[in-house]
Image 1 (cartoon, one colour):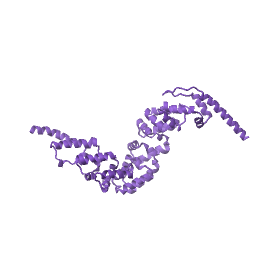
Image 2 (cartoon, helix red, strand yellow):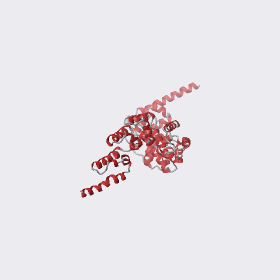
Image 3 (cartoon, helix red, strand yellow):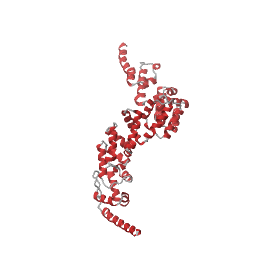
Image 4 (cartoon, one colour):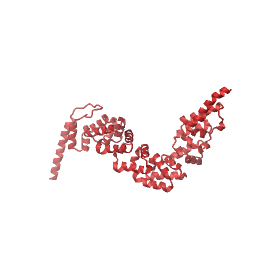
Length: 397
């Protein structure tokens, strides 16, 4: 009897599919327009199909319905045809009602068309989420902690899967954990703006252990706050990665009680050991020893984050144009972080002009001090002062 019932069911489903196929496949082709949301087949036909057959079965058996998803992604969301076809695997649309409301919600919250396209491209499943239950509460949460609508749009478009995280189990605990360290809401917002992917990290689970490790080493709370705000990914990275960076910093001899320790954490956090070796070889070309390199890193940890091109460009100019000794740069490596075009070259040109006119003596110029001066101080000492003196000298002569 069960076999007979099974055969009857198979026959009914086959007949149903043939009828549905006749209804959908025999419809005439429909022109696509960029803004029309009711294209290809009528919503009534699509809804009746979805009521009878599961979405997965429809997608396999009914190319017309799959085409609806692709067309919606192209015409309403701005995806390319190729991208739409690829992303149609992750979202199945049987009607434009819900995705239309999702797009409308994003636009109401200040998302630009490009940002919406980026969100859909990275997280197409958002079109199947409930705007009222899933999306709107999260957007309101970001507004409640101090994000403007443009800040929220930038955060979501930079990391769209943030909207897939639970508000109560991930987003709020993440915010509360960071706030427990930084205290001031303004600083928490700055931290989150600097690291949009913070919500992707399991911060609530790691904050206690990270604080314990740092405090046991003697890192002051002030330095911990700086590290969290400057590089939340370094502090909240996986336990394995965090410990690896910590061990490398300690192996260089950085004192945990000094600010350079957390600066090194940031620098080493984004620099692999192979990259460190490559940086050393670049400096070695200018006469740096291994000890000198380590010494420079301890004085200015960010020197390892300077690009290879800038290292060569800056070192070559400082040594061959200004005439500084490579060993002197080891003692003052902070100059490697200064802009060549906005500071080093323009100031050297001013000093060269003053030297050529005899307005200053070379032995009176400390290039490192001159390069580190604030712009206002440099202008007063080397520009405005001599602009006043030059007319007076002409008159006296």
